Every structure is written in structure tokens, then in C-alpha cells.
Image (cartoon, rainbow, N blue to C red; front, side, top):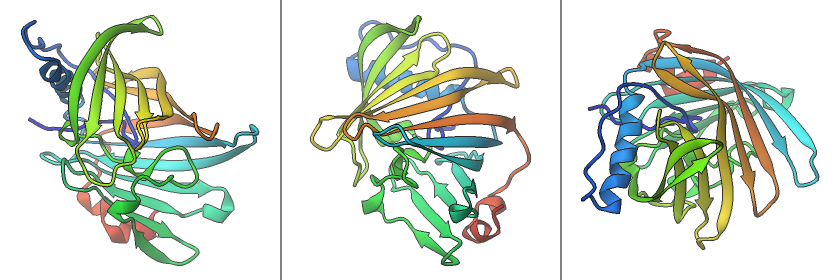
Length: 267
């Protein structure tokens, strides 16, 4: 079975559609139920192959001042491993051509490279720096990879109605090194297993930020994707909005479109 999380911004984070598979019996533990929910979410997004999209990223500081960036995004499904993704900045002029490449993995650290056109070089992102902010946004580098369920220990917390939708609330604790989070609380809607909200807690287990997903659309009768992602940092009062547009599946991308040399050619 293919194992993937999708939000991807990439990764950063996305979603699903398929037949509902019964979860475990009432005798299951909270950990077993949490894992079953995560695996069902993963299963419903399998088989999408690849996609391309455009993103509008808006950064807001605590005074409410905004900066807007336009980004091209593409991702490739990798059977048996995490997905590959690339984000290419088109504007503003001072960061035009900057490109981020992520190879997601299950338990091994994600591989990430950043191309800086002003320096004309590719910089590898150290695993120890994955909790840092991505291009000044409220997304961390570790948020950009596909969020494989093997990366986390899961625990079902409760059922809850949110935005009028019956949902599961699951706690997940990162199992990989150098994470900036002690834990996350994740809301999945019960009908489609779409992500609704993720609440992140920092290394001191204090509330750090909240990521919400909205404006969902269904593609090729199976795959759900959020049209809007909004993350608010409760400690800095900064926020980032991502608006997704022109999402196209199964465009024929291959691994050759995601090698390190492709970063320099990215447009």
C-alpha cells in the first residue's frame, strides 16, 4: 500500500477521496484508532501520480502589513516513500527564481535544497534547521514535505463538530529528529477524511500556531484539495495565507523534473 500524507506544500498539506474503509472495532485503543484514521487519510490520496498548481502567498506581520508572493508548485508521488515537490518563486523581483526542492521520506530525515539565484548556488537545508521559517512565512521547512503517517505516533482524542462538520481529533507526535514541535492536534472530517485544522505546539509544549484548510474542491472525481490554507502564529501574531489555483493532476512529470539540477532551470 502506498503511504503518503498530502498537504502537501507542500507540501505543506492536501487531501482525498475514495471508498470508506471501516475503522477498527470499539475495542481498539486510542493509539490504534488514531493510526487507523491517519492510514485511511493516507489511503484516499494514493494514486494521484503528480500535480501542478499556482500559489499566492501573503505574509502579514503583527502590524497587519502585507507582502505577496507568487509561486509555481509541482509534486510527484513516489510509491513506497514520501513525495517529491518543488516550489518556484516568480515574484517579487528580489526573490524571483528562488526554488525549493523537497524529497520527503517516512522516518528518515527529508532531503531539502534551496536554490538562491543571486548566489547562483544550491544550498542544502540541514536537518537541524528544519524547524526554521520558510522564506519568511509561518510555515517551517519541516511543514513542506508530505506528512507520511510513519513520521508520527498517533492517538485518537475525541469527536468534535467544527465548521458544521463531524470530525475526528487526533494527536500526533513527531518521531523524527530535530522537529520544532512536541505534538500536533489534527482535525479530519469524518465523511471525506479531509484535513480541517492542525494546531502545533512548540518544544516547550506551548501553543505555537494554527493551520486551517478551507475552500475544498474535488478533482478527477477522487482527490480533494483545499483552495485556501491559513496559518496564524499565536506567539508572534504573524500569519501566512496560501491561495491555490490552476491545480492540474496527472501532467506526466517524472523524477527528472525533481533532481537538484532542475532547481537551476526552474522557471
